[in-house]
Image (cartoon, rainbow over all chains, first blue to last red; front, side, top):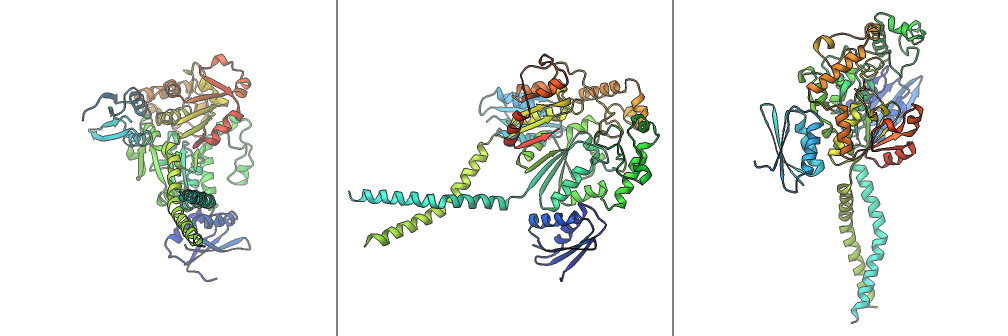
Length: 75
Length: 75
Length: 204
Length: 204
């Protein structure tokens, strides 16, 4: 999937991936896509909740070899 | 400013100035004005919140040489 | 008067229409209110040690990231969390009713020690708390967990509002200059109306 | 059939007016509800030391001064706060998970001592708690901070309702006569419905 900005949150624990994602989205424009990489297993549920609460759509959420990949579309 | 009752809450700390003011107002009649003197720097925000919640209007709130002066009009 | 029955008809028509439309309008109004409502949280932070500093800052910064309106009221020992220099925050395993007998962080040899039986053993080790604090700090770093200073800065950056209890400032003999910038100094009367409006209110 | 278009017109008019007026009426009703609502708070007070006695009584008395409806449920060690004689409430730095390593009150020489390293020193000083308690009491007086007895009396005067946990009374072997007047003795089943209705509910 194409994305406009990349955020490497691997090795970081809750709540840092969410906080960094919020910050990254704030610097983007509406409709742009942020990719987030994370190794925190809690982040799967956390990014779903984050998307629901903030209105930034979670386009996809996947796992590959204990690494998680999220695509968020800025509101 | 004219006032009907005077409350010296100098030297007292939170929550005493608010508690004393509430008590003083309870003994007054609608429209009467209570003057409160205080040295607690937190009382500036606290009396604003008190007025807003209780409906007793804060006619004025001033500072003079680390002493605070409040005029409250009883609801 | 031929008009009367007609008016009665109109009245009946109005009532029928209101019965039809009202429930749906109320539902819409409530939903619109909810949708436009910004979630909010108030926290009373009362504890001043390294381990207990985490809950308020983690919840506050995360809520802010979710777009919530967050206010923390720091009172009693919690005031220590607002000092410019918080590098001296410590873990206090002794007398910490929530801490298990074995240390949950540090290297294996450290974790395997059964600290609290007897408690005196733990209390008697010179510098035990320094060791525990250092190990917690290292473990935090090694596991990608944010430091308190970092979480505090992130909270402020995300517009979490910090209110310092002025009464405690005086009680403990602090000066406003001991604290970081951007604080409000106020009391319980300022905090309570905020707590009233908040969706979540927690005492920590 | 001349009546049909006329009624249809009237019906359309009615619907349009209802659509116009309703949202604003509903908003008014919701606002009136909010405005006439008496804020309320319930607190569970579980701690029985001099320092931790402050949060429940400060928040309760302040809320009462703001016109709130307040209830405190005293349970476990919190029950000590309801005893007739509370002059023996103590600060206990030992076993106080929220307390930082240095004492936050008292004279400078006292505050500068790093009590917890080694913790044994603190635990071993005969009468340490008496000293800490005395210094906190003095500091409280010198700073125009209310005493617990004063805040408790002010809370009762302002109609804060005190509920004592009957189960704990039995557990600790207290007699009703040990306590101040004006208490309700009840259990969690009495407290919970009050907490449900409360705007703010805190566990301290």
